[in-house]
Image (tube, rainbow, N blue to C red; front, side, top):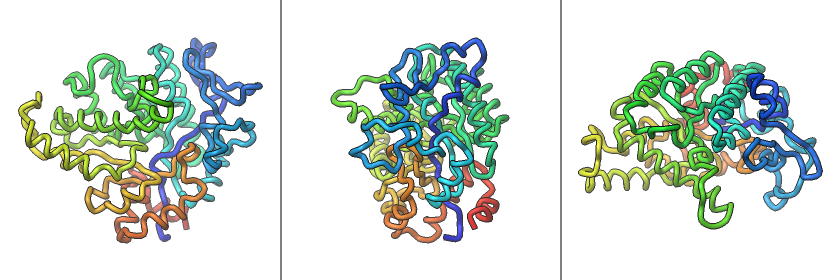
Amino acid sequence: MSYPVISADSHVVEPGNAYVDYVDRAWRERAPRMVDDDEGVRYLLDGLAPVRVDVAASAGIDPDRRGLKRPYSDVPRGAWDPAFRLEQQMADGVSAEVIYPTIGMFLYAHPDADFKAACFAGYNRWIAEFCATAPDRLFGCGTTILRSPEEGIADLRSAKALGLKTILMPGAPVGEDYDSPIWDPFWAEAVALNMPLSFHTIVAGGLDKKVRGSKLNQIYTTIHAVHELLGLFVLTGIFERHPKLKIVCVEGDAGWLPHYAQRMDRFFREHKYFAETGVLSKQPSEYIFENIYFTFQDDEVAFRYADSMNWRRLMWANDFPHPDASWPNSQALIEKQAAMLTPEQRRAILCGNAAALYGFDLERLTALAA
């Protein structure tokens, strides 16, 4: 392959000092921390259920064994150590990654807003240092609580100053929802800073929401919240008012998009008298395929039907080191699933689209991959 492969959605599993050493001093007694005892290696989150580190970082482990306790020494070191990260990237044929949190995603469900804001600020400082180890290959995503447009704008500017490439949005802001005009200055600032806004399925779906059935159903149905969010952005005119705003639907797959877009167009055509923001100047599908980017890892349907959507908004990802990861077998998966793409489509989905969205130096990455 004559071009680099970019994972548009990978993760860290934060090391034990990521919050304890980086949150403001007033919050360090309560800061999330790692423990290793008879119950296994876990992150304690002061008010939330503990997170098992060995499960969160179980890429490459047989699914039948993921529930078994494993020592911290068994966790891929690249999950938290940037030097080892580069080795494990190379082993998977990946040249660069957009990196999201793990423990930070669970914190979005924490009820204490001040505590959560302190943790997010600390995490942003830590992930900026992590990525600074290899700034041509590691690209961080910041976190924000979004209590007000003013605070959100400050978080955007801070993330930009730290060198972070995007910011992870909560499924819903504190107070008025995203369709309220009060958020227009925030959208405008994201455009001005050229900062795409990311909605990750697990965060967008709300880890604190009650779901019928088993825990497995809670994980599976997070995609429904993504559908709802995209409809909110399109049908309430947010993209109409901010045509250059870019959002990223992270880990939501994309094979469902052609039907979703067609169905939204039909329902808008038949029921647009319910719209509260007036008639949109374009079909809903046009906003979906212009303003929204989608990441996916193991989604053969997305590759197969790339021509039925805007494939310049599709971005492949390996999700390392999470259980859904294709690591360390990403190249075999790509070879199988992307075989029907044209060379132009393949290059765009594997690296070009992410590079264009985030402003990566593709020439530099190509040289590093050679």
